[in-house]
Image 1 (cartoon, helix red, strand yellow):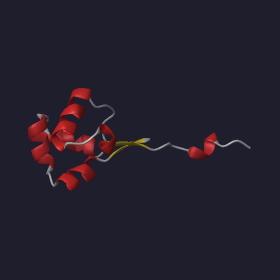
Image 2 (cartoon, rainbow, N blue to C red):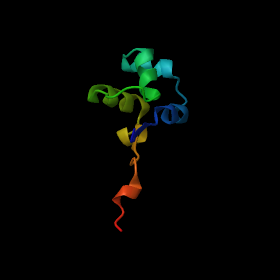
Image 3 (tube, rainbow, N blue to C red):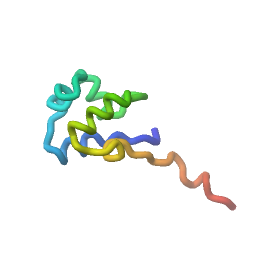
Length: 76
């Protein structure tokens, strides 16, 4: 998957536990854990907004795009 979830890194930087963030965002611990481990295919903007608001970060701090294959863009 070319989108990498960096929520664990941001949580560590902010010294916050996943359970605390789940309570503050208002979503289940299981759903937030699935997001953290990259087991989800989508995230609501309202959820992303709440996470960023609570962690005082930007979406780019949590989500990272990594091209699947950069070699395919090279010309001969």
